[in-house]
Length: 256
Image 1 (cartoon, rainbow, N blue to C red):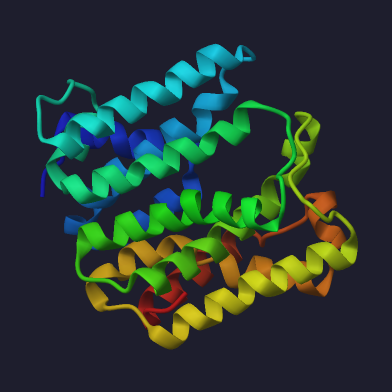
Image 2: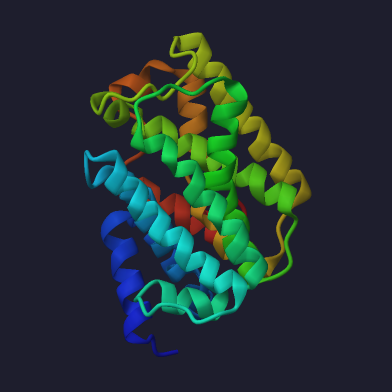
């Protein structure tokens, strides 16, 4: 399969901004890459939109631009020409485009420095960002169990959140409700529990390339449970060689 210029641009965007997710896509069949790269490129664009400026109004406008683009896809009208939006319009159903809006709406938290209101607010942030991303990616590939996909997405989002905490705090954000070692450990246990629940349901072969994006979730969450101090120290994850070996194993055996 030959990639169009737009798909090549989406792949390059993901490779530069989200290299781990790029690796997971490259481990997938070529046909699945055509679906996943535009969706993950969208995620890159909306995830970085709140951070490219210190002007909250400009950040809000950038997010609104993407909401408008998805609305065009969802309503079936003319869709603006853009290297990410154009291939998205070819793969997203109207329903999934509408659901993708919550990935953008929840990112408004990133613009401001207010803490999460409560545990439900943090859970909603993780579910509507990482959970929705995994659900839309998987459903675009084939039939999928939404609850299982959102559980796996939550675990993936939480693992990535733990890794981002030192940088978030350096930027003046308050990423956790309970930043104590016990609080961090308890949150990781919740994430691992949701991952295990998703595994019990299982994932069909056609949607596994989307689930593979969470191939590091278990490793990171277990590291946090064993030693929650690693979060603040920014010492989560494994070596590049071990990480790639883990990806190969998960790809071969079809699990995360």
